[in-house]
Amino acid sequence: MDMNTLVMLLALFVLSLFLGVEMITKVPPTLHTPLMSGTNAISGITLVGALLAAGSDSSSTAVNNILGFVAVVLATLNVVGGYLVTNRMLAMFKRK
Image (cartoon, rainbow, N blue to C red):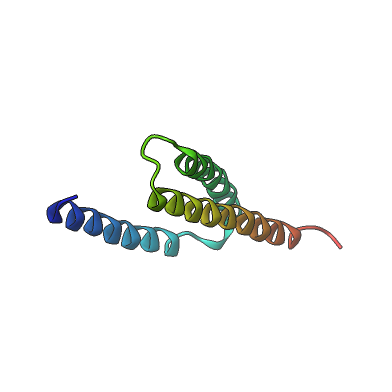
């Protein structure tokens, strides 16, 4: 990977971080629960992609396997944490 591609990918990553933060801060609190459920579904798709990346045999190097494992761990934490937060928010609406 040449330097120009690396700089372009890094700039794209930073711009996506700014866009994500701006989008999240503009969401009203009443929409957090439905958006969290949708985000959990997307995170599940990310987990499947991470599993495919970790288990691919095409160019099996140690770096690919390590990054795939890290992606699986982070995607799993994201899914589990998202469901825990959604469950906690939905529990606030239950009658006692």
